[in-house]
Length: 135
Image (cartoon, rainbow, N blue to C red; front, top):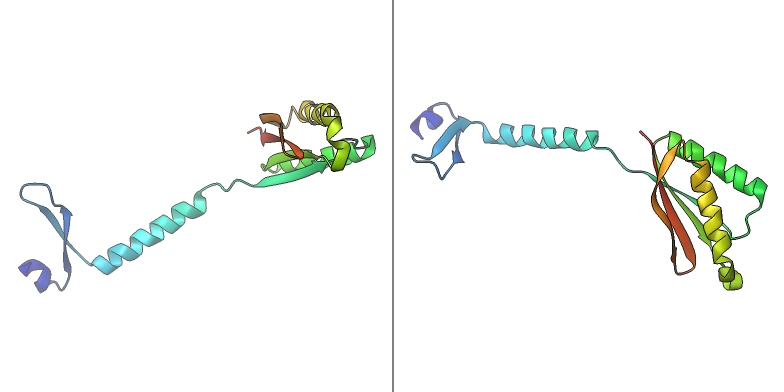
């Protein structure tokens, strides 16, 4: 305590369970500032997962399919995850098989850009499938 007071710094207890307890003389406010700075730098380096969505209808035309497939390729090349889904309106739910075939066709066409993370699954009025980009 005397040494810390002479240097006008703080006495910080590092390991209280040790015998005798380990203490360090330091500027505590500066220590907290540097710790926040380190945490912020680590947080900025963490990868952020971006999810892009592509929506189809159960009877999507071939031209529309090709257009959306091109966008899906671009998203996967950029490193974003892809959530492709078929939205069933009203009575179109009777075309569940067509929706599943459409999503599986998309997965097969995008095989070289990404891998299927979750196979097509019906949730209410939508059938969703996730595709993750290949590294």
